[in-house]
Amino acid sequence: MDVVFDMVADQRNEPSYNPVMTYSEKLTDGPIDVGTQFRATTTVRARPVQMLIEYTAYDRPRVVASTTSMATADIQGAITFSPHPSGTRMCWSWEVTPRGALKLLAPIIALAGRR
Image (tube, rainbow, N blue to C red; front, side, top):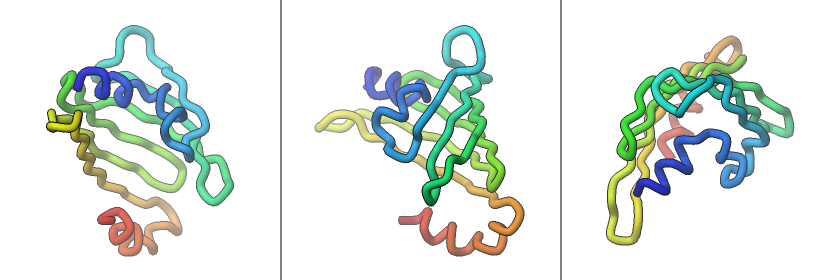
């Protein structure tokens, strides 16, 4: 469980397992903990989207929570980790608050997120 947590909690690793994240860098000094910030880039509809991620909770190896700010939305949520007979179970819950014109699509975004 520790290995999975450490891999996921370090946002710099995400481009290696998430094909839409193309870049991630740690902005703050010191070990990863509450307050750690990352700058990342994802690709949405073939366009780069910049984001700032800040950890709001960090309880190794059980939970990492964050806020993510980008031009089109703000996201708050957490990933929890628990032991499972076949390895580690990860569960995530995110609250997406669209900005600008995307506010009109909030009901559709909510439906897509439930999947």
